[in-house]
Length: 514
Picture 1: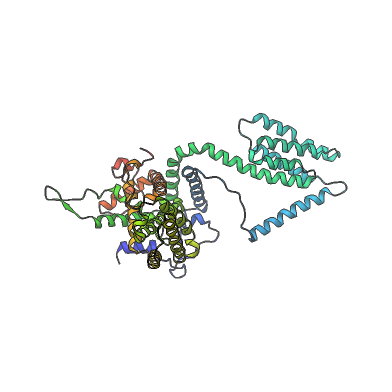
Picture 2: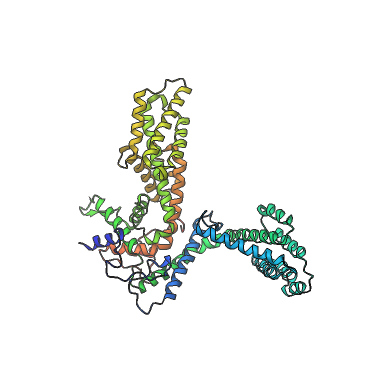
């Protein structure tokens, strides 16, 4: 078996169990971030702390990357799944806490120890969400919520909960977003101590998330300016940690690039030039990278993803699914206009209605499967065509034509269907032409795809932006691997010191840099 076959089987095949291959099982309590970083027998000089540091670096890198490439990113509300054990335990613990709080307040004399702790926590939270320029408000909060003074008031029986509760709510009203005004008004109407404290704490948690998301929005331009260099640095540290335990951190990236290198090389017809020698002007590193990126849009789910694309895997797979959905939509339209004939030629309203209805129905593919969904599509398409014909005083489709159209639409479930393959090929050709560096204004929408022009442009724009960022971060690794492949040498996993893709001439600057 060749080295290439061995490598590809390692990337795509099933892994042996630890007992079958003679290796020790993976050590317990290793976090998921380290699954590809821990070897069967790591050298003794590599400490667990070093591995954890590398994993933390990858977490930070992932967060910075998410903020940089996703303009809509924000911290979501942490919520356990409904009816989950985690949610049940959490709710039970919360109820027990507030029940204990209530029980202490109802004692004679009241026990305000938990109230004191709660006020101290509230003070810390309020101070924590202040902006640096709000020093005056910070000083006021520290002055009013003086824990020593409050403790003395409790001991002397002079504690006034309403005063402190109302003060906290007043501060929250000054700090919170307008969307929380209704919640603030609700708190003001609560008179009992425990319910008021409970609602204050719940609202402060929301305000903390609001402030965190506001901060992310404010620093996003700075992160976007510096994320490329930051991601390079963190990924280099990650590779070094893997190298220390004898793991190739670019194994699947090398397989991915080598496959596209060989596919492009083998698929090109060598043409003699004027001097009689063979020439291959399109076999360039830039074209290899273009084909490699485009392959992602047809990526089979079980296949191991390149390490350098892993942070964006869900985004790439979403683009892949969207592009193939557009392929199905345009295939349905092509069949419809072919079967229905001249009576519907040039009817734009029908074309847009078909796109809208088919797009909605195809959203159920993951749940119902492609076959049942296309049956529903076929029924809907026949109805839309007949409605269009009737509205323009044309006779509806004949029974034979309806049956033919339904059958052809159902046949689109087969990936090898000629019409489906044709439309996907046209869409991929548009993506390939766009990746070659042409301006959007000079790109021509493929034949039969005018109805999905806007959706196609959106997919391409997102894809180009993501691949440009990816090439800016990992371009030196790609250039080094491709350079080795073009020279016929073995690919090692890291470029030489000071090596840059631009300096090598192998890869053009990304559009984000140019």
